[in-house]
Length: 158
Image 1 (tube, one colour):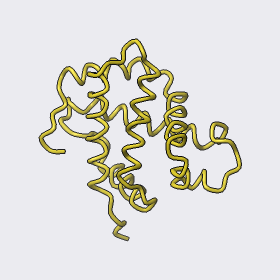
Image 2 (tube, rainbow, N blue to C red):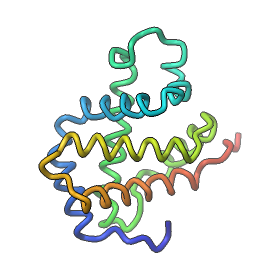
Image 3 (cartoon, one colour):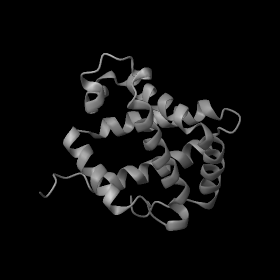
């Protein structure tokens, strides 16, 4: 992903849209994950707390907080991208995410489904703000975060 520039215009779109969405992060996070599972039901097997659960997804007590934390981390990372010039998720967090995604067997297709679900969630949350430029801005920010996570996807050293 080196050389890909996150422009000032893209930053403005991401900052403005996240500012509006932030107050609904819990609900939007859940919608985001329900969309992922609607597109790829098998992705549920990647989450230990969903694997053996008979509880409907939207009522699972662990899904909403997890979904919210993923959405917030993704969006906060996007907001900081231009100022920092790189993904600003703490290195320890990136290493942990890389390790967990590696161990869970996450593959490129999962990231693609997640990107599509993220963009659809934002589009539905902000129909009046949505534009091709906003789609590109969020897509670029997501791609850079994924590249950073993938660079840490390796077996743990212990």
